[in-house]
Length: 208
Image (cartoon, rainbow, N blue to C red; front, side, top):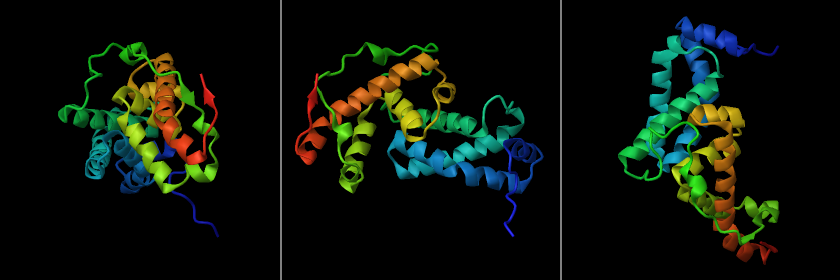
């Protein structure tokens, strides 16, 4: 006999959370901790800080659950809390030079900066090459070098798989701004990784 999963629907889980049921809180952590940690780690590049953000995210969520209106999914709400927590840590580190919490909704200064258009199509590299540990490390370094505005968008959309609307909600920007940032992030990564994949794939066809 298959064991029944507690809180099989989000509505039931939310009801349990609002009722203060310990099992509901455990289920929320179980479902979302890996994703929350992944986002924090990609944004901060530090395991200990990511662990701190993970704990702070769920603590904040538990304390604010009565104020959660249910207009978005719980996972999206948690991403938003984790993103804000990571953002504050980046500001404290003084690593953020291109983003302000007071930036108007949809504003995106990154769109004004030029990007090299001489690229190598490394996306056609063999899957086994892309999956090597060395290639993954190179990709992680390239992602870490992106400006925060582009890195957060790329992580949420292309790594975590959020929709454009969900990403916009987490970041507090418009869907169009998400599209713009994602396009620029992909171009920068492609430019940054072109030489690496050209060397390791024996040369791929350049595109103008």
